[in-house]
Amino acid sequence: MYTLGINAVYHDSAATLVRDGVVVAAAEDERFTHIKHAKRPVPFSTWQLPFDAIDYCLREAGITLADVDHVAYSYDPALLPIMPAMPNKRATIALPLEPGPSASSWDALFLSFIVNARGQLIDGSPLHMAKRFRSPPDGHRFAWHYVEHHLAHEASAFLAAPPGDTAVLTMDGRGEGVTTSLGAFVSGKYSRIKQVELPHSLGLLYEAVTSWLGFLHSSDEYKVMALAAFGRPAYAHVFREIVRYRGDGSYVVDEPRLVERFGPPRERGTPLDARHYDVASSLQTVLEETVLQLAHWLHARTGLPRLCMAGGVALNCVMNARVRDDGPFEEVWVQPAAGDAGTALGAALWIDWCERNRQGDRTRRWTMNHAYLGPSYTESEIEALLRWCKVPFRRLTDLAGETADLLAAGKIIGWHQGRTEFGPRALGSRSILASPIVPDMQARLNEIKDREDFRPVAPVVMEEHASDWFVGAGKAPFMLFVFRMRPERAERVPAVRHVDGTARVQTINRQQHPLYYDLLAAFYARTAVPVLVNTSFNTRGEPMVNSPRDALESFWTSPLDALVIGPFLVTKQGATA
Image (cartoon, rainbow, N blue to C red; front, side, top):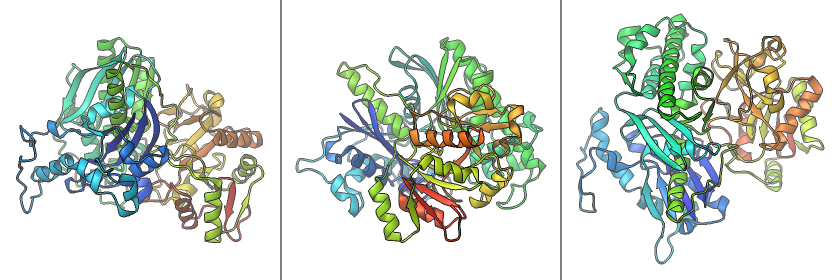
């Protein structure tokens, strides 16, 4: 049984394909279209389905759309107030000829695109993909399912987490009307316990402050998290007036009125000052406080020792660390594609789970031990492209060792190996790698990627050495938690220490990504440091690279020193490598 999951409503459009409980493929559309987040979250973009990501998933399984049994779309229009009470082909909704500036004036167009998504999937594919989407003579046989947005987030956590009973907490900007959901997955059944509805949203508040700080909302919230470490929670009392926990697993978020409270918004590109740092710090503090209160309530209600989380807010690794360290749960697991891309995963897993349950199969067959679910490219495909582009390259005889030599010499490497990561974090398949020993490496990387100076870079560490370098670090394969760096180690790896003494750590073992692990082992053998700098392989405004061509374009339009792609090393004229 094949189940295709689709996220297409707001942003981070994505697709996932599940076969009998096992994820075959998952990818975000941005990796193919080169449009970051695939599209902006505006109502007139809802018609855009992630055809490239869907095409990849079908191709990876060696099937066409005609072979798919179920399609799960991670949004349920029946939950929208504007949806006709008796929806059918004769039902009508009114759309103004010129919708006004308010979001609600676009609701009819927004709804129409979602209701007609099935037809768009069947008939709207681009010409070069049409063969894989073509209808058979008797028409497509798949059943179409609308899955509530937050249920898709929830399922992406409890059906991907390590097996066992778990509490579930999801938080984002918004779904059909819900912004936060608390529940429990026990003995194979999911029970929802509490939800918070619009307009009360921690995610939308964080977006509003992101915009006030001069960054792009629904995109740059991670910059606000990084900025917070430079400030003091001087305005925490103000945000505690805006966000009030109600004591029952819910909260209230009042209109933030940021200009009234903090003055004019920052213009993009203008200097940041202490007020900006302090606003970011205060927001982050109150977010952490509120989510901790939710976690304590959920633990008291369920009595479960484990928590899994998803939703865009769960990409806040500083908050996640607070829940891990100061919360009541023994284990906290976060789904790595926690944002809206992950709802494609959750919708597919949920429909697959329900259908197999209906047939008497209640077994969990898959756990998300890694996020390498996207496209890979063969050695022959890579070599053919390198020759066609007439770039200087050579085959490495000792890939891990020779790359480690370059890194130990202070070179910055583009690294393109294996299947693309699913989710926003580069985890060693599409990464820029560098030595953490070089003091100015963070500044060099920010210059290469044209990033703001305050942005930290993250470390990857061999799993068995993690706790020797970072306090309390165990298994953290998805770079979704921060850990405090051990003071006695900090001077040895200055490039990965953030201003507050923490680092957003990725651990790696050989089972997860053998070549990546071998590279770290080789670097460790040369330097006695089992740590590398790992940042995403892209430049400003671009998604992470996906194909070998993407990697070459990014490499040749940036001052990277070398590119290790498959078994080949690409260098630039005059470079010593």
